Amino acid sequence: MMMTERLELETRGEAEMIDITGQVARLIVNSNLKDGQVLLFCVGSTGGLTTIEYEPGLIRDFPLMFERLAPQGIHYHHEDTWHDGNGHSHCRASLLGPSLVVPIENGRMILGTWQQILFIDFDNKPRHREIIVQISGPD
Image 1: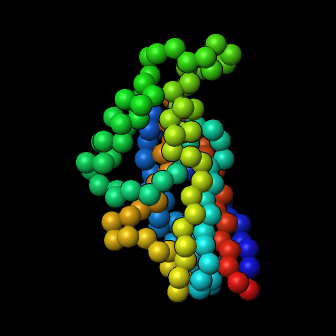
Image 2: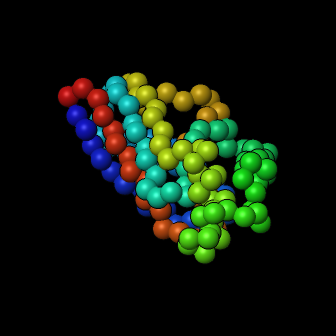
Image 3: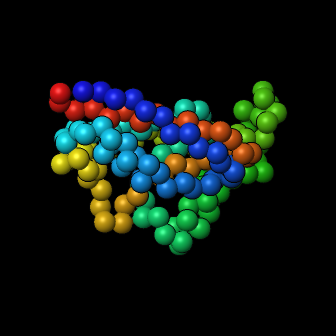
């Protein structure tokens, strides 16, 4: 069995973090799949997916961490071509990655107690985002 769905998000950009755990869990329940996996993929090159403990401290820490790793305000060759000021956004997204796989057992994602699925939009402007969700397992 393979089911493909899409999550549509409106974002503000600038490392906005969005908890999508509940939306993904609802899609799994609606699929009636008991055991398998869910693949999440961010369409676009300036967003990423990860799991973290979604709490106020980490919500503040993550943008600061990415600013240290790929700071704004320095020269990125990407901007020589496109002049869009988001070279740092592409670098940050590539560090995080565009996809995530989570196992499913007994109709639920296997996540730790404090583990949530997050989409992070690194672009420098608001965007419409699409997350592909593929739920798969035995028929």
